[in-house]
Image 1 (cartoon, helix red, strand yellow):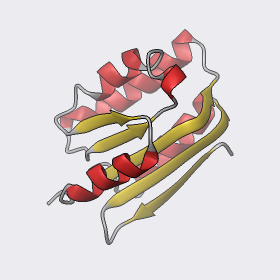
Image 2 (cartoon, rainbow, N blue to C red; image 1 turned 90 degrees about the vertical axis):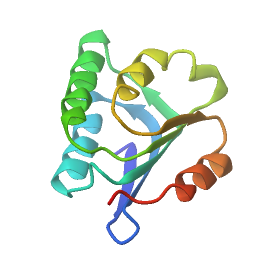
Image 3 (tube, rainbow, N blue to C red; image 1 turned 180 degrees about the vertical axis):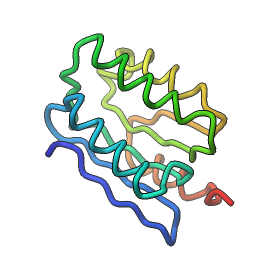
Length: 124
């Protein structure tokens, strides 16, 4: 599986690492885990520097619609780490993610992303 995650209920933090080709099924598995684990309101650190999204337009829009469907409830802050060369391609998805009432920030390096997400208090 190319998406690995840890849900830490004590710290209210989800740490995600993407490696290799990411399919819609992979994205759905991750979202199922976060939703099923009661972690939608947790802070999230998503490191996608080694990931490669291999979804077509319709699959991407289906994942985006699912993510957007969570925005009527509390969702945690999101730090996304992307390789420099894919940040531009990700703008559309980031726009959808940014519509939620939460802090969101894009990084190209993991350490600043970790510092930023750690500086935010867990959801109350």
